Length: 71
Image (cartoon, rainbow, N blue to C red):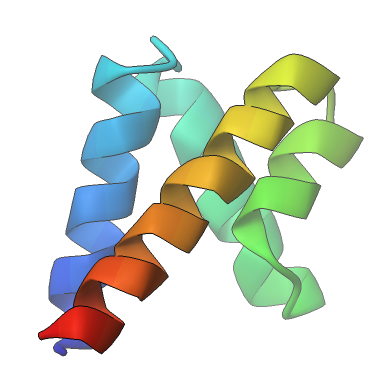
């Protein structure tokens, strides 16, 4: 699976399902580059997502992983 495609799907999820603003996502992406961290954790650490949203993110990521394993 192409990494860019996976990032695009994830960003679409953040925007469409969690209603994160483009600026919040941009902050997370910039910080991910600086810290070399995981985007979901960075979003949570910076208060851009709640703990409930973080759980939804991890559920979505797990579903994506399971889907790609079954292909």
